[in-house]
Amino acid sequence: MHDTNVTTLLESRLHAKALELLRKLGELADERGVGAYVVGGVVRDLVLDVGAGFDLDVVVEERGEEFAETAAARLGGSVKAHTRFGTAILVVPGGGKVDVATARSEVYERPGALPVVTPGPIARDLERRDFTINSMAVTINAGDFGRLLDFHGGHADLTKRGILRVLSERSFEDDPTRILRGVRFAARFGFGFEPETERLLRQAVAEDRLSTVSGERIANEIVLILGEPEPWPPVERLATWGILDAIVAGWAVPPEVEATFAEVARLADHVSDDEPGRRAEGETWRVRFLAMLEPSDRGVRNAVLDRLNAGRRMRTLALELARFEDETREIISADVRLQDSTLHRSLSGFSRELLGFCRARWRGTRVAERIGRYVNELAGTATSLTGGDLESLGIPQGPAVGKVLAKLLEARLDGSIGSREDEIELATRLARELDEGNKS
Ligand code: ATP
Image (cartoon, protein in one colour):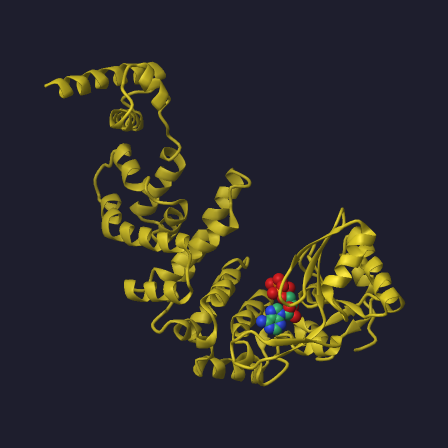
């Protein structure tokens, strides 16, 4: 497999500009007498012929920053950021963005902790990768452009066997986040695990290896899973393989949640059809995370948020969910006619994510129908008068303004007023009443 040349693939799959950039980087590497390669997920996606316009990951057999700085100086680009592993982001005008990393080997001194890193040849760099399908590289040196390096059988695992296979027995122990990465890739490509890899993965879960991983790293992997186009299969596997339970004892996501995921996707598609650009990915993963949290009791929910070191927004959402369950759900599921102003008052304090979740969770019920009415028809309702207008009508600054505006909104929602003139009339009357109230 070592002598496969994938130049034609590179030529057909990459933008002309990106290809040209790779060739220039290869020439530079030749001049500097170092090896340079495209590596990892990019090569995988190239071979699989999926994923449009990827960010390029390049590895060089010297210090990545130095190589990137030299390339930037020559090509008129800039180098953006450095990380502790000697990775630099090279930005070239019109040519996009390339991550340039130092070829390195890694030694894990403590399971779950970050590894000790030393520079090394490309072969060592590929050995530290998570799965065979992610362990291929393509040479970009001018004299050797397009040669596929596949030391671990990644090509066959990817194209013939359709499996995820780790490169060493200790892989999941060294870095247990690979458990979550594996679940994500298996689901994304519809791959199985090679039997020994599955055994090692399950063993790592049973031995509680994830307990050594920081909350941020686990959260990051869950966010990536929830950002997949089809997030349910990996989430289901996290649940059925006891991975969620290993993250926080008692965390379970039952099969019914699948239908909620499906409804979240359906609603998100709807929104993007109606209002292109309104669908924010960030929002969708949070909605899905709520779906993973909701079946648990408050104790487990809080334990999950603590374990994942969740940020303020996610915690606020969990609080919103509790408030919805405790106070709001009953009001909006009642079998009585509900004034629009009441509906508005009940729901206006919740975020779009929370409402999106509840609408999906209680799909087909009055709750979902009313949230739908609120979101689509009421949420955008506004008074035509502003606080400033009220002041010019003689209402003094202060709480009175807020009160009158709330009344105006209520009246507008319930249809008792419609025009600006109606608002002025009602505001004037309310002001007078307030004034009289104050005098008496
Ligand atoms: P995606 O399509 O999801 O971006 P990717 O494979 O490009 O997938 P990255 O997280 O960008 O994912 O990683 C780039 C490459 O770095 C991987 O293909 C793999 O070779 C290597 N890698 C990333 N994370 C790990 C890890 N935890 N352990 C070993 N190798 C890793």
